[in-house]
Image 1 (tube, rainbow, N blue to C red):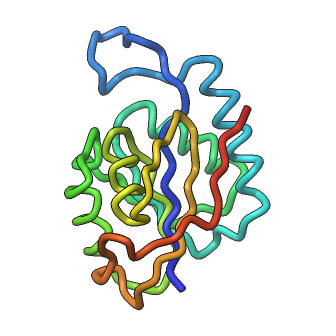
Image 2: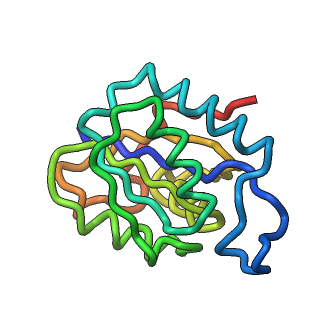
Length: 157
């Protein structure tokens, strides 16, 4: 069975030095959250997991914390995942080929909309929330509305 892990970036500063949303960094609380998420993920075998990540500073910083403690070797940076809507996220997932877990690190409102759509349940991902979904399809191209069930939800304190 395919697995999809949706992770919203950790808590960020309200503004960046450049004034651009894209450049916002993790706040001190976000760094603590990301470290706790990394520790949580050490309990899961991530060796066969493909990471799709927005190229925004906050998602990359979140991923860096995860990568320090976990076996995450397949990493793809996707500029089009920055503030992506549900349709864009779903399109990226449907393009994937192979029987592996995907860890998608991104932003709201797109991630929450995607999780809600795939599970037919209202879902809201707060910062540094991980939703792990069982995908009831044989191929990534077959995922659609209601094709997933939530197998885990985790958010560090």
